[in-house]
Length: 102
Image 1 (tube, rainbow, N blue to C red):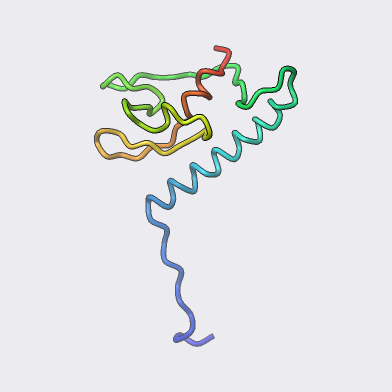
Image 2 (tube, one colour):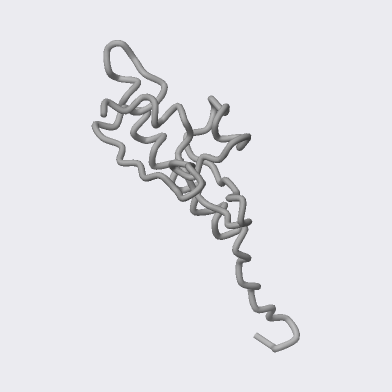
């Protein structure tokens, strides 16, 4: 292959990396959802036995910040949110947290 025809793939940007990580994470949660659908009564969201949450210095939990889309989205199980400092984070949505047993 000549140098003229080979183009080195460009490295993924941080946004692309976090988006891909979120997609894979949500896919894994959806696999658990498929198992949850087999339960009686069937469930749309997996039920975790325990969800351990911390609280940030500004009072947020699970990277859920006021007015972020993950608070009201009922289709997604994991999303990228943006903290007030601009840092992008991966989090599960509120419906996943609320479905947990403890």
